[in-house]
Picture 1 (tube, rainbow, N blue to C red):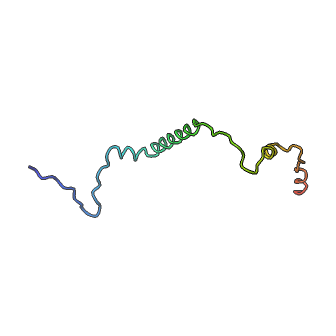
Picture 2: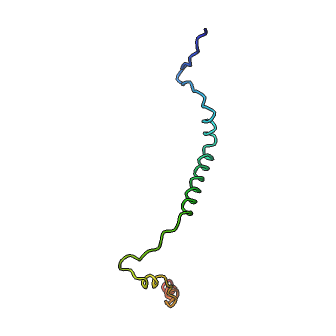
Length: 91
């Protein structure tokens, strides 16, 4: 029987083992692989978020009336436009 050859350190540089094939492929295409995994996760959560049912509408919190909410939602078109006063200040 022949002796097995040992990998030995000659000089200051250590002996480098060759990477496995899958690790070499991963190192070469690392950004693509991570990008595809990130995209799949984002699409999964978008689908998960948009397929759930909407929460049931309930009562307003105490102290808030529907009239106050409707007043806030209305646009105040009768307000005086302040662009003329703003331009006078800038002159």
